[in-house]
Structures are given as C-alpha cells and as structure tokens.
Length: 543
Image (tube, rainbow, N blue to C red; front, top):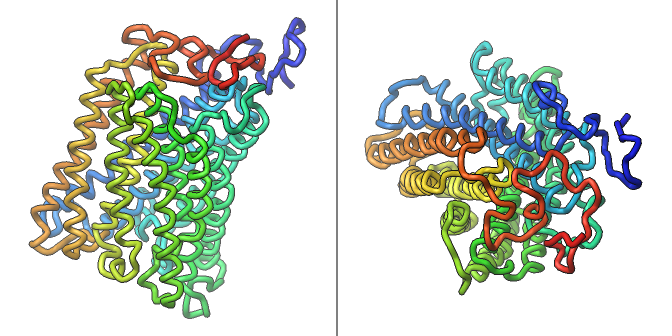
C-alpha cells in the first residue's frame, strides 16, 4: 500500500502516504489529499463557503424584518430561510471549521506525523461536499426547502415536500462524516503522541477536541435515529411522532434535544480550547489552573447529557422534571465559570499585548460571558414559560454561537495563520475586522434581548408596530456584520493564502508555547516524520 522508500529509517511512520516524500501537485493534491494539513485547509475553505451561504440567508431574514409588514418574501419562504440558515450554519459552517482546526493543529501539537487514518480523513471531508450541495439545493426542489425550523419538529416535518427527505439524507451523510472525524481524532490523540507527552501535558486544544470527539460519537447516532424515524413516519406508515397512530410529537423533541444539547457543547468546547491556547500566549504566562480546565471540560461534557429538556419546559412536563432540568442547567454553568475564571486569572498581571488573536480572545470572553448569563435566565422554568420561542432565545444562542464559536475560530485563525501560510496577516486589517465584527455583532443581537422580553416570537415573518425600531437596528447591524466577514476574507485571508505579507518567523508570537512552534513557518508538508524527543514540559523539541 504505502510507498516507503528503500532507504527509509526503521520505525518510520508512513501512514498510507503514496507521495514518495514530495508534495503532490495540481488537482490531485486536493482530491486525493491524505495529508492532514491539506485536509484541514479544505475543511476551512468549505466551512467559510457555507458561512457565506448561511450569511446570505440571514441577510434575507433581516431584510424582511427591517420593517413591519410583509416586504420581500412570503411567510413560507421565510420559514425556509430560518430553517436552512440554522442547518447550514451548524452543520456546514461551525462544525467543519473546528474539524479543520483539529486536522491542522492536533498532529502538530502532539508531535505526530499525521492523523491516524489518513484515507478516512479524506473520505470524511469529501462526504461534506454532496451533503452541503444537497442542503443548499433543497431550495430548488418542488415546494422549496424544509420549513420546519432547524430543529425539524414533528408534525411539521411530516407535512414537508421532497426537500425534507433530501435534507434528512444530507444530515445522515454529515453525521457519518462527523463520526469518522471524531474516531480519527480520538485514535490520533490517544495513540500518536510523541514520547514524553502525557495526557496532562497536552495542549488544551487537544484536550477539548478529545472530549468533543467522544460527545460526537455519543450523540450523532441519536440524531440519525430521530431523523430516520421522521423518514419512516413520512413514507413507511409508522407513527412514531403522529398522534393519530399512537405516536407523540414530544417524543421527537426529547430525542432531538438529547442530541441537540450536547451538540451545542460540541460547537463550544473546541472554542474553549483555542481560547486556552491564545490567552496564555499573549499574557506571556502559563495557563492558570491547567488541571482544573481539563476537569471542567470533562464536567461540561458529562453534564451536557442531563440538561436536554430545558428546551422543553413548555411541553407540559411534570414539575419534578422541570426542577431536575432546571438545577442541572444551572449546575453546568459552574464548570463554565471555572474556565472563565481561569482565563481571567491567566491574564491577571500578565504582560499583555493586544494583537488580533488576543483581541478576539478577550472579545470572546466578554461576549460569551454575556451569552452564558442570558442562558441562565431561561434555565429558570417559570421565566422560560414567558420567553421561550421569543427573540430572547435567539439573542442568547447567537451570543454563545457567534460571539462564542465564531470569534474563537477567528482568534485561532489569526493565531495560527502565520504557521499555516508562512506570512504574517496585516495587523491593521485584522484589528479593523475585530472592531467591525464586535460592534456590529452587538448592534445586531443585543436589541433582540429587549424584543424577546417584550414578547416578539421567533421564526415570524411579520410583527406588530411596537417592535419596529429594534428590528431596524438589528437588521442594520446584521448587514454590517455580514460585510465585516466578507472584508475578512478579501482583506485578510486572500492575501495570506497568496503569500502576500512579511515572512512569518518560526515562532511569530513571543509568548506562544507548544510543538507547533517548533517547526518552520509555513509548516512543511510532512512534519515529525520521526517522533520528536521532548523536554520535561512537552512544549519544546530537544532532539
């Protein structure tokens, strides 16, 4: 299978690399990629494309809501837009972006030559392309795209056109891709660490991804079960979620949220890992409370399985059930608070400088904390009955998903891009991107708290007059935020991909620690062909 050269050294790790130690070129390099760096790049480009598509849908939503009355789209299309915006952003933008980071960084951080299963890695990426095309293409099917909300609640899903089946198929494929990616990450981290790198010496990013990967393997099959039951209800005469046949639509919600709540932690734990890499580098200190960070991530992952029904306080559950899920939800705030405390303690009396990665990291901590607090409020069941399915909820989860996951991805991009591309990004443009994103994000989503508290329901194409002002502000903010991301791609990403900018040193950040800074910039096609010998801290290569 593998092309090991005759003179190769003993113990040579050549995991199915058919490339005779020279980088393949042309289209073959990308189609048949087995190199973790190339696959990481593909994932990142795919997720950014999907972010832009999801962003266009969001712009259409905000354009419709700019003023009261029906302006641009009919309510049915509006529901399609909200549904597909959610599905594309979650499964097409945020999750693949983190997997791209994992592919790029985990082998570099643990001193491995590549991911454990290089060919499966290629397969798990290429599965995303047909799935993404199917999701986006569902708009052009008879009856248009699914309009049941991204949560795909029965009985709406039983009434949708053929696009519903296409979307179910697409999500199955994306789920398979996620599971393969997760298996690959677990095996890589557990089996391929350089000698001397114990689990408790690993970078935090590897830890968060190890735990996230277990979450993925645990919950993706649950989603697959839920949408398969929807499919059989639609076509094969079963009645899992159809009350007429003895089914229960609420059961769907239970199964969906048993996946859905760990899913939101799948989208934030790798973000915590990135922030735990960036903050120490720019505070020029070691991460405060490393062990407590690891335990906190594990605690969040375990608790994420027992909070799902806080999405369902208004479905008529018994008070005992409400109490359990309310307390469990409040409890999960504790390990999260431990992490925020540790980041602040890391910054405390550090020699901080505020380059773009640090700006995004500090911005993340600030805005994510707001998102965390706004999540504690609907955790209280009697309050939730007032604000469920209002714009308050939209505000809350965008504060943790945009200002959480997306800002952390940006922090990671600015932090590692010099290593990926070999050139420094333009610092001035990076700072413009940060401030523009930060201000426009808050302009978009902060007013939604007030809209929600005043009672404006989500997923509605029209609204009464009293909500007009805040909606106008939110729409203007949304368009500004969307433009900021286009600016980021054109003014920051394109130049570094083309190699424009000053040459990056091996360690561009003074306080950065870890094995990824022990290889040249740009990172060579093959790194750590022989397992490196590490110092006692497992952050430097000594031989």
